[in-house]
Image (tube, rainbow, N blue to C red):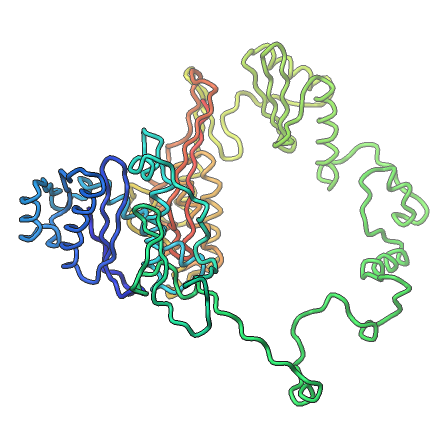
Length: 533
């Protein structure tokens, strides 16, 4: 068990603290809202007695920290009379009471997210945490057992048909009649222990907030024609889809006349074509490309706008004729599969990177291209677009050490002290509206440089992604965070990705998610790591 609080805002029932008790076997959770810490003693006693009556079993052991609400004479005497062993975690070691500490975190995150997502006031946190506990007991699976806590404790599966979205409007029925002006004194609420409906005489303990009560709408007064003249309506600010004809300029029978049509007419008058022909046939058929004659291009010159497109189309058709298939995701990747042996070619403008497990197939690809195109061999791949490639017997090592050193030097952090982690583990970045603004161009330049570096540095991917979300209005705190990433890169410039030759072809994925991790909008962060080989 553990005690959370005090909360910054008083709950709807005037409570400040939350007592959390977790069953070690079923992971079933009980929570109680307290006004003072001293109320925990009586609530723990009543909970132990209630569990003994319900299960016909005695509570054998309780575990908590050394808080005075748990370590006092009244509770110790009660434990001695009931034969309960009270265990304490070591000071400043919450890990020894880790089960309830994790439940505290989950309950807090869910209770923060639900009111924020529905725009409710902060004093509804008590209702939110009650509903979060109710959901966890009936939805979350017990590890290694694949049963929910409610099913383990009750021996039957609960019904969740009554579950509704938090904040949704509902009707509270009192004596089957909802009348206007009637006080809500005795309402039904959900008991988290057995899922039944019980009577509550305290309106402050109601799990439904006032915003959930649907107030009957009063009928509008009838308006007479003479009253309309007295209170003329103000003009509406909404744009209507159907405009009256007297507001339309021009003749509706002539159809729409766009600005592009006017521009085309002007272009035809000046004998200039607005659309550049992509092929010789289109230029010949376009009478406005040249008024009387067109020069036919026999050979495309390097540097023309259409030279790259023509080169890709020509190379693609040639490779497809020789058994290569074009990639669906990457249209510049070509693969040929012959007898379970592949040859891969990657095109980047007029550079081609290719490879094959069999050396003879690689030389065959070279001869195939030389028959059609004028090409020159550079040699074994070692450096390309800032990527340093080192081919060894065990595998392939790709890094960007030279680019990383230039990046650190370009932003003037080569003489700064290195950091061991790319981001602080205790600091959560937010919009920081009260922070000092910095130069957006400098911030975006750093982010762009780091985004190119993450191609071979997955260890900084998450940190760079978080900082990239503040490019619209960067503050000094955000600039310090990206500088910390660069200082981390400065001490790890030689890191990269190693592809082993002995690895398998299995795809393994790992993911993690938190509750309301974003300090601004309480959205969650999702992490993913996928390994191939």
